[in-house]
Length: 358
Image (cartoon, rainbow, N blue to C red; front, side):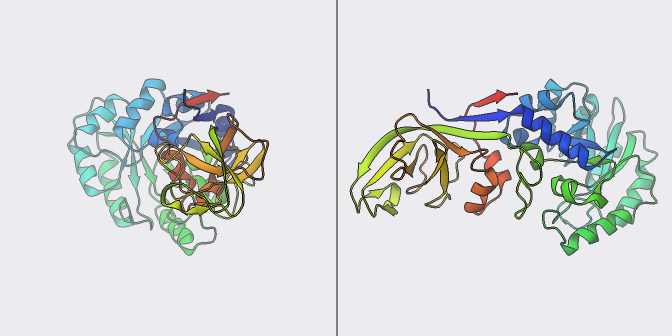
């Protein structure tokens, strides 16, 4: 069996959710489990958090039904709402909360014949300019939906564009826009994502929406997960499957982009970009073998990558390699590759087995 595995630490997952709740005492928190729980496996993540979580949040009806299979009674929010008119009946059938982010969705809702009313979250575009209504439209739809038979709770939500940049001017503007609707009698309000949950108490409304922090990655470039008290949830490991000796001047990998400047020992590791390890990882990006860091040699290929073992002569065939985890964090690797931890975690492919430990 190929030795690559993603090990998911369920105790760390629980810790990170509880930390989110501690950041906002008295608030409730939707655990965001979209995109297969950020690549961690939605069924096991939901099963683990079900005794703790106040609710879950996903991006689509299809994702919601996966959660419903595991948590039939949990509060469950569709962050983008319904994409087609007939989805409202299914949302009602499965007891979902739905975002309503524009006039079209609101009209669909009012035209829907439902078995039971829905908890509705009007989405305010407070400055992200991706989804949502402006403040005047929220006021207009609040007046119409507050008495609609299709609506149980009427709630308000919005989303930050720059909460991961502390002190950014847009954060204050979005807070002011959200606060401008304080006079409207919404049942619940929600604004804080992971970054705002961790560092922006003014955004802590009735419901928090922690996402990336649940999985032990930092939403900030300048604050590590460890500094924030988060624990890494996924560790990606494989093993060395071949070792070869190179003379000075020999090259490694596609394009012959790495050349040995001395006698070198090169280890081949069973992991590549088809598994989700980034092809953009530059030469010198570090992995861990026998507790020591060693650099990548050459380009990452589809199923394999090479590491320079010259300064670790005791390393050899079968040795475990940590690609990311507690020793090389997902955020460190993402920064080296010019991306974010969100992307790397969600790109771990289905052919990588997930092993769970609690």
